[in-house]
Length: 88
Image: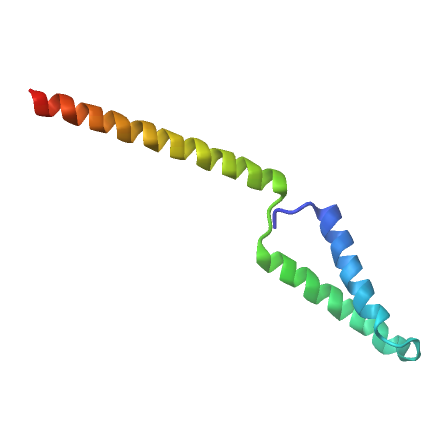
């Protein structure tokens, strides 16, 4: 997974805390088990998402933009070369 682990740990902790706070205190044993299971479930879900950081996303967007520009340039060059070839 390509995600800032500090942010991920905090996010998982926040989600687990919210789930845990919904369980009454008199069910303390069940609450502790629920917290462990919830943490494992949430972490597993995040891992399956294959997340990337915003920085990695922005780099890929920039690379895609440059690639698209290069394709346009090459298409234009092909058109120009076809015109030269047709005129011979």
